Image 1: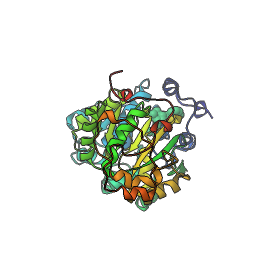
Image 2: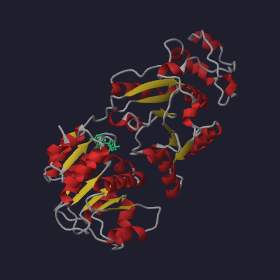
Image 3: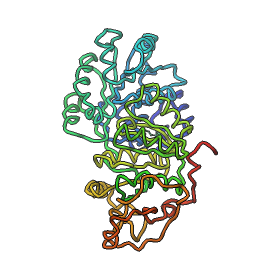
Image 4: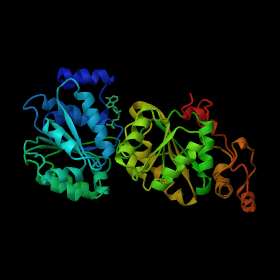
Length: 435
Ligand code: AMP
C-alpha cells in the first residue's frame, strides 16, 4: 500500500514526501480510510506506531475544504510534551497548506495562547486543565468544532483527567467526528468510548506487544549496584543515544548528576522542572546535544525522539504495559534498539509477566554465573568504584559459594562482558559531547 491510495491534497502529499515516509504504517493503513470517510474511531495503538500521522493527516485533508481561521479540530493530550510534539508535527505536515495549530497547556502564560487562537488557528492541541481554564473564562469557543481527538486516552485516565474530559465535551458540538487513541483499554476508557463515539470503527495494532525490532536484555542487580553497572554498560556498549528510566523524580535528577560527573552528556526530564527547563531538556535530547536523558515515566510518556538506540530501565516499570511504553521509545519506525532492564530479586515476578507478554525470555548477559550468582554477589556491589577498576574478572560463583561470600565486599561486582550484548566495541565517549 502506498500513500497515493489515500488521495491526499497535493500540499499534504508533498509534506509526506518530504518526511521520506515510504509507505503507511499498519495503524495508518487501517485508521486513515475510515477517518477520511468521517467515521468515529477507536484506535488501539501505542506510541511509535505512527498513530499521530494517522489522525493528523486526515484532519488536514478535511480542513483543506471549508472555512479558515476558525477552530475546527481539537486534539487533547495528557502531557505538555505530547501536546507540544503533536503541535510541532502538525506544523511540519501543514507547512504548505496555510493551516495553523495552536498549543495550549499550563505552566506558561495564557495570553500568548489566546492570541495564537484568535489569530486564526484551525487546530488546537491542548492539555485538559488549561483548556478548561480558557473555556470557562470564555477566552474562545469551540462552537465550530468538527473533529475531536483524545490521544493517549488511557494515560489521560491514569492522570485523573476523565472528569475534565467530560466537562470539555460540554463545550463542543454534539455533531462532530470523534477519534480516541489509547495504548490500552481499561474499563473506564471503554465506557467513555461507548458513551461518546457513534458507530465507531475499531482498529488495533500490536496491542501490548513491544516492537519486534527491539532486543530485550535483563541484568539481575540489586539497588545499590545499579549505578556502577550502568556506568560499566555505558563504557562497554555502543550507545548512540540512551533514555534511562527511574521510578522517582529525585532519582532522575541525582542519577543525571552522577552520570554528568562520570563524563556523560546527560540531561534529565522530570516533573519538578519548570516547563521551560523541561522543553530545554527535551529539545537538547532531540537535537543530540545530550546523548543521554534520565526520565520518569510521566515526563517521558509519548516522547518521540528518533534514533534512541537504548532504553535502560534503571528502575523496573510498575506494569508490563509501562514496560512496553518505555521500550517503545527505541526501535521506532523500523530501526533496531536495545532495552536493558535492571531487576532485583523482588522484581522477578514482574519480569515473568513481561516475558510472558514478550512471548520469550529476555537475554541474560552471560550463560554462566549471572543468573545464579547475581542476587547474592550483586548485593555486595559498590555504588561507586574507581574507573581504573574496569576488570572483568572470571568468577566461579555458584549459589552456595555466593552465599558463603555474602559478607565479603568485592571490588568487581559482577562477571560478564557487556560487549557481548552489542555489536561493536563502543566506548563511553560516544555518549559525551567530546566527539
Ligand atoms: P508516533 O507513533 O505518532 O509517535 O510516530 C512515531 C514516529 O514514526 C514519528 O517519528 C513519525 O514521524 C514516524 N512515522 C509516522 N508515519 C510514518 C511512516 N509512514 N513511515 C515512517 N515513519 C513514520
